[in-house]
Length: 344
Image 1 (tube, helix red, strand yellow):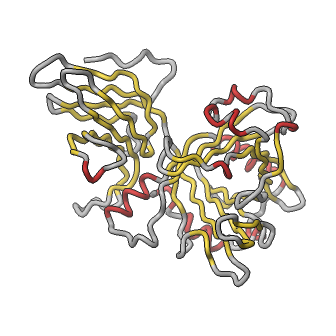
Image 2: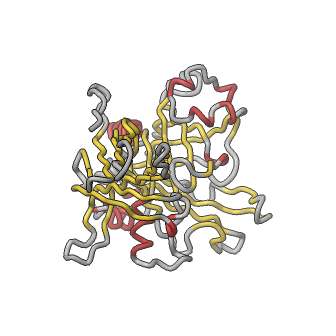
Image 3: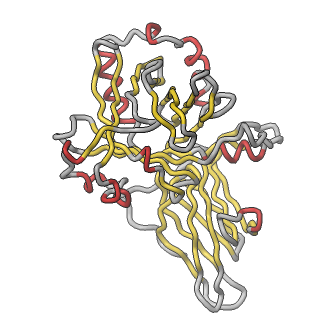
């Protein structure tokens, strides 16, 4: 999280939009930057790992969140269009239908901001399994969309503050009826974004102003932007033929890959690839590392899994690996122009 060292300060000194200059050329640049940085995958697995290692109180710990933004070409919808998804529990976790949205971005000269406006699909089931595939939306029309509803149904206004982009809903502009709590809630959203991370904070408040949905201490969800890796995993049993899994793709913000080996040496292995802070007491506290880890068991039951091996490298590295003769794994930054990884 080192690249965000100045964000906390920026959030404090930028308490009101008036602090940003946001001239017309700066707004055009901000729009261009958003359309460059937002597309991709984001996950807060590193934050989760760090909080668990540091015994963060349960009521203050952040849930596992994965977000994606896909840039699509949909002229009938808008010039700058993104499809957004949210999952809880990682890339394969539970899907949030309420935040499966189409966002359009444009310069709002009157507010001196880049306006990001949400809409939803009339038939979301048609697109859920293709949400990361821009080509799946090539025929999307404005008539295929309806106004957004719920907690994330309001416009977000983005402005530049130094090297960060900050997006906020306007005070008092966002409210909806909570179907679970049976009450009207006023919503506030804040996004802070740079090339490597997205921090998000939100609050749903009741009529008295009490936070009934959101972090009690209003601390941000810290999502890291993911890089795509190509991997090779190996298992060399004492008896029997060696087995490999060649070419799985994983992102480096906490992705999990499950590998079921074949008889007569059937095992259920899983690997994790995680780039983020390592809470070490060795004198290198808060060091960002890229880590590949291997376990036997069920990733949904980590307490009952058996740790088998780990390799690490600097956060900037394009690869990480480990091997002990029986178990091995290596992942390399994916290059679509390069030949596939060769087996051992």
